[in-house]
Image (cartoon, rainbow, N blue to C red; front, side, top):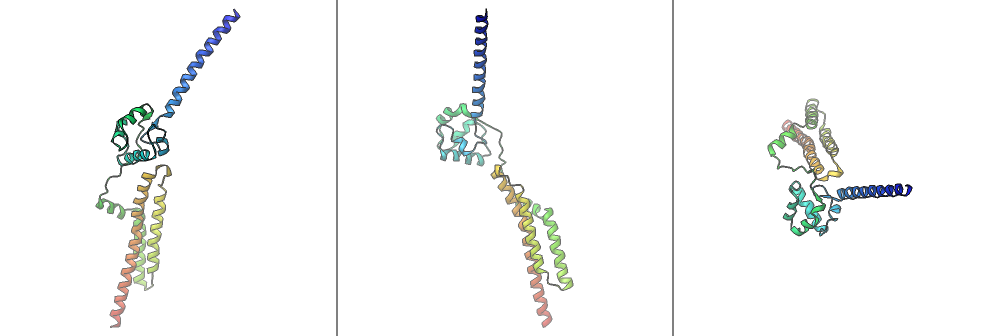
Length: 210
């Protein structure tokens, strides 16, 4: 009786071991899948028939076309045959696309965004106040006007850098470029106002001398 009980326990242990092994194989297979919409170049190298050149082509295509809509779309990439796709299909998956396609900007709307940017408005107001005081009081504030414009630029760059995400360089670069486009506006205004005041003062002095 004890022998039969021991034998049954061994059978149950063997059955449990089979289930555990099957679970582990399924679990490992799940994590072995390569997400072609988010995989790095190194992860793509795990696929059969994919070297460094082809992995980079996959990433370039993904960034240009805002990810893959289907696994078969890999065939549109030069050097990747249908046979390579067939060989790797069981290890491929399509994750959610994290790439935001940047549309061509409308120049008019971009200029409007720059003009209405709160940082620009604040620094431009300060610049014009200094310009008014320069003329009203007779004090030379042109260097201060330029400094305020440059300060506005650095503030804009600093704010733009806050959106930088090392894990998502593609979209982060777009955010930084938009921030830079806005930031340099204050320097342009500061230098322009300073130059105009200098020219006006020079012409005024010549007129008074005559």
